[in-house]
Length: 130
Image 1 (cartoon, rainbow, N blue to C red):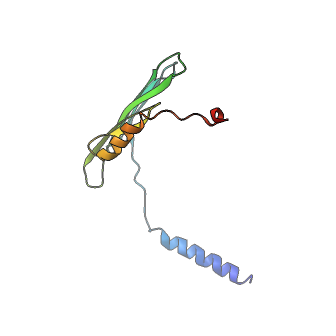
Image 2: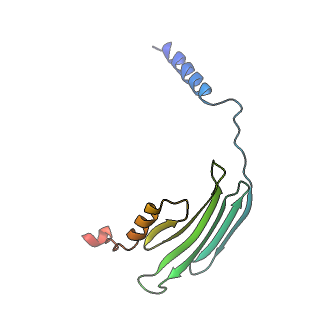
Image 3: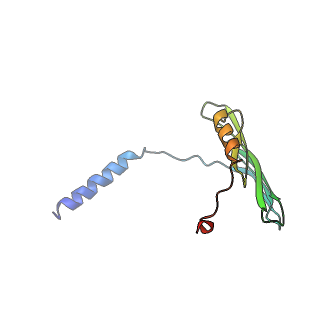
C-alpha cells in the first residue's frame, strides 16, 4: 500500500499540471482613478475607473436622519465593455427598500420585480418574533 501512495500522488500532480495551460498569464489591469470621500455622518461618494473601460460611481446619503427610520440610501452606476464589444451600463439604487437595478442591459422583468419588491413591508427581526 505504501508503494501505491507515491504513484497516486505523482498521478494527481500530473493531472493538475495538465489542467493548467502552459504560459497562461493574467493581464494586469491598471486602476486609472480611485476616489472615496467619507463624511462624518456615514454618507460617502466613491468612484473608480480601470484601464479596461470599467467605470463605477456611487453616492450614499443618509435618509430620515435622527429618526428610528434613519438609513443609508445608495445611488450608483457601473459601466463595462462585454465580450461582444458592447458598452453595458447599469444604474441602481439600494437602501432600506432593497436593491433596484435598471438600464437597457437589465431584463425589464428583473427591474419590475425589484421595483415591486422594494414596496413590500419590512419583515420583523428574528428577535422581534419571540
